[in-house]
Image 1 (cartoon, rainbow, N blue to C red):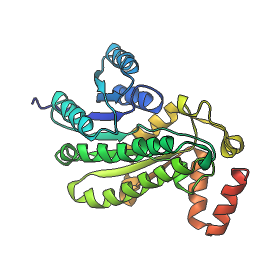
Image 2: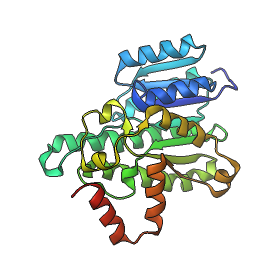
Image 3: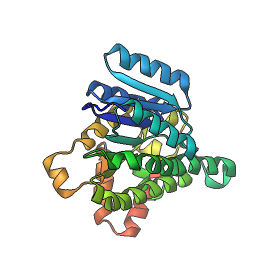
Amino acid sequence: MRSTSRKTVFITGAAAGIGRATALTFARNGYVVGGYDIDEVGLKSLADEIERSGGVAHTGHLDVTDADEMATRVREFVEAAGDRLDVMINNAGTLRAGRFEEMDIAGHHKEIDINVKGVVNGLYAAFPYLRRTRNSVVVNLSSASAIYGQAELANYSATKFFVRGITEALDIEWNRYGIRVIAMWPLYVQTAMTHDVKTGTTESLGIRLTAQDIADAIVEATQPSVLRRAIHQVHFPVGRQTKVMSLASRFSPGWLTRYANKKLSQH
């Protein structure tokens, strides 16, 4: 393996949306980018765009629910990128909206497989390489729906509570190795994933954030200010609405938080 001083980032779900915007943003910041997805056509155009701008990209097929493939792709990237992994971004996810009992059980299970097992697989595969890279960071894509369970997004919201929990736990566990584990908390984002989503909360709050908003927030979170480093910030709400809701939930009694969410969801 060749050594390099150039930082590296591995991103799941990189072919489109938040993953793609994040890959391009890290590339502009001088990182060697690993972009992985099941959409190989999207990955090809991503790699071309990064390389046209003078960056370095490694891409490949990845089904995040397959632990063996995840381990292989992370290892291949680290070997190709100079034996280091500075940032691991567990971005791949899916969202299904509607009344819980009206959606098929197979779809619920698939959402859990991608949003939960995919994150576990990414964390497990990346750990050995994060451990030997100084000041490495894991970024897990959580959601504002991890503040309080969301009507019409019950299963999705539950998967993001899992992401919240494992982020908090591993940030404590892996601190001994110098690995930060953080979570991004956006509200609804203007991507293909939310194109046909219509719930009470999308009607009440709108879909205001862009993929670039999230990408910029991720890059900023991996390079924290002195204050954020001092307080060891783990969760990063993205956008004014999420910041307000996150702050309010800390001081609001449970019944009031439930009432607010009930009103926003129009139930």
